[in-house]
Amino acid sequence: MMKRWLPSPPLSFALFIVWVLLNQSLDAATLLSAAVLSVIVPLITKGLRPATVRMRRPGVALRLAFRVLYDLSHSAFAVARRLLTRRTGDIAAAFVQVPLDMRDPNALATLAMICCLTPGTAWGEVSFDRSTLLIHVFDLDDEQAFIDMIKTRYERPLMEIFEA
Image 1 (tube, rainbow, N blue to C red):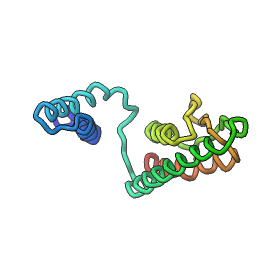
Image 2 (image 1 turned 180 degrees about the vertical axis):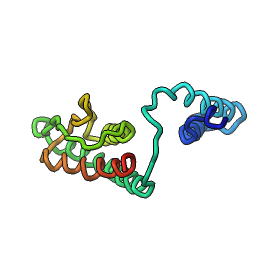
Image 3 (image 1 turned 30 degrees about the horizontal axis):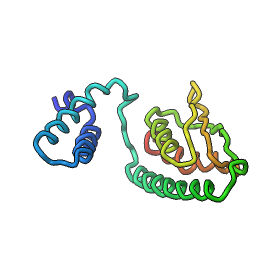
């Protein structure tokens, strides 16, 4: 019965918290609307989720989360520094094709979020067979080093979490 009304309890919990934070209120109407949204939105979007998420290595997920937070802040400062100290013509923007070993749709979605949130990178597309990822890089120094970084820092841990 619980699974029928709350197909994704973590999503419901996150929606409830975000709604309360956005409204900056703990009054009854806010809590009620948060509760209603936290039940209705996961039910409506149940068909949009690619597969049930089974996180196999929570320790690896926690380390990845801290690594991503570090990389986000580091990248933000690097992009700001480059914007402030280089001329537009000196910035080497490029598209990079990253060969992928992972195939899990949840892992790919997580990698997409990491790439989109990180300043200086943008998810371009993934090939139909999910073997290649196209990423736009704001300022690329070494293509192979960038590919190796994506594969070791993000793809390998995501494979441990979702595909192991």
